[in-house]
Amino acid sequence: MSANRDFIRRDLAVVWHPCTQMKDHEQMPPIPIRHGEGVYLEDFDGNRYIDAVSSWWVNLFGHGNPRIRAAIQQQAEKLEHVILAGFTHEAVVDLSERLVALTPAGLDKCFYADNGSSAVEVALKMSFHYWRNRGQAARRRFVNLANSYHGETLGALAVGDVGLYKQTYADLLLEPITVPSPDCFHREPGESWRDYSERMVAPMEETLARHADEVCAVILEPLVQAAGGMRMYHPVYLSRVRELCDRYQVHLIADEICTGFGRTG
View 1 (cartoon, helix red, strand yellow):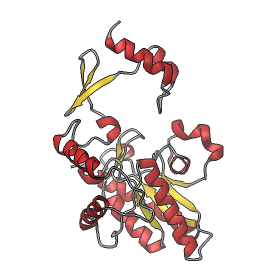
View 2 (cartoon, one colour):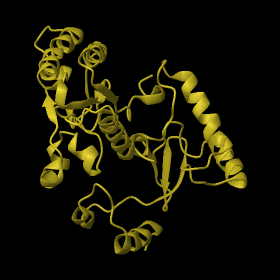
View 3 (cartoon, helix red, strand yellow):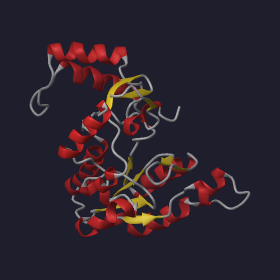
View 4 (cartoon, one colour):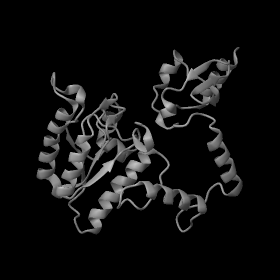
């Protein structure tokens, strides 16, 4: 028995994989990874694979990056973890100062979550709580884009629009107001990306004009709807939606899982 086969047997006996139909693994077993370096992953039999999905979009600097590895080791020797409720520490303050130095004016506080779905949940709750504190309790809805995806937890799943992920759980989810996506795949022959994206601002404006008094925020994925099929649109749409959110006094939540920190170059 190869090292891969033995490890696969052990895995399937005890591991339930996420976003996976486990029955598929009867014919297509998971690939057991022993080692990673740069863009490459290596299994227990020595086969190498290019990690083209960046281990679910998050591995920006490659596996085994020596600078990151050294920083993790150095921090672990000093302090591996402490609760942030009522406590603080040097690393989180240093990182927050560096992040705030990069963000636009007004974005001057950092709140930390440990994954994309949790970050979306935090943003939804912050927006809802803001309007509640302002005495506008009628604001409890969110506007999203068709074909959008924002995560697997219940709040994040609710503001997405990919049926494959959310249809089964529909009875558990809040109902967003969904507007057409500016996905430029659907532009008319000869129509530019910019012109199509500009044209698709109209449904958003109509929605906010009608529902602003009950809306907490608009949530969208800047530039690319990744889980929706890598569908892209022109950045002018973001500028126009920002203007609309300011005009109608609703928050704008940018889910930057695929575009934050230079992912689009």
